[in-house]
Length: 321
Image 1 (cartoon, rainbow, N blue to C red):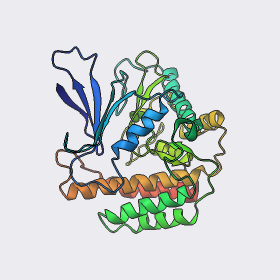
Image 2: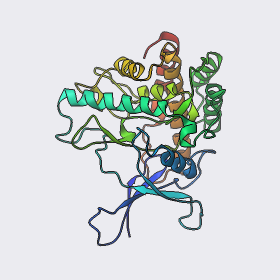
Image 3: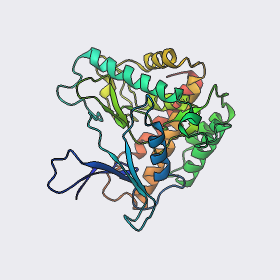
């Protein structure tokens, strides 16, 4: 077998596994947790494998799962194997010649919103996921969980982050409904059709998925969606500032039309998403300082935390989306 690391990232590791002498058509994808210290409840391979398997046959495009191994003597950690989906991965730039027409870029955004609405419309019980999470009290627990994560990985004294956590806890809205949430839904966690940019071939990276409030997915997407004319220190990519990509408000309108959701409290969800992102980044910074991120470039990550907190505060208090 040939084994190639294709996505080290800051979280789970993704490999292409190909039989020697093969042209690559029969390659598969292997996912396993990162090495070194990891946060409690993170990187659960069985959960990720379960939700992807359950969504097979629904309108949500996911790879076909092939095998789950919980025996840690095989690779030193649990892992699972799934089919390799051929698609376009858009991270920091659009590939040359791909979606170079504004209408195609708009189609990408529309496709992302439609798939997100389709995910949130899936009945968890109908796909065997009725016990995949606890929707009741979900938002309150999420605020507590990420506050604890921040407390456990403090990289510096950040009173503004503490204040944002407290404010979120005081203003938790009532959830309209519960559903399957991805937890980290964004453009670069999807594979797009090479010929039809508006078609999502597969949604990837389900490690944060659970049953909860679907609007947390929309809020999180906004963190990763800078719009034309913006330069945000927290952004990991400026792709969505290109002509044709819609604004965040237009994304919300597309989602509301497709899902029927009431977005009156969207500002809270966006504020929470920035808080969650700040806590995640603080965890990366802390792990890097402890030597658990060897070989991964975390330069500048600490500089993202304070701007992220300010954007969260602005969303929560000023209604700035």
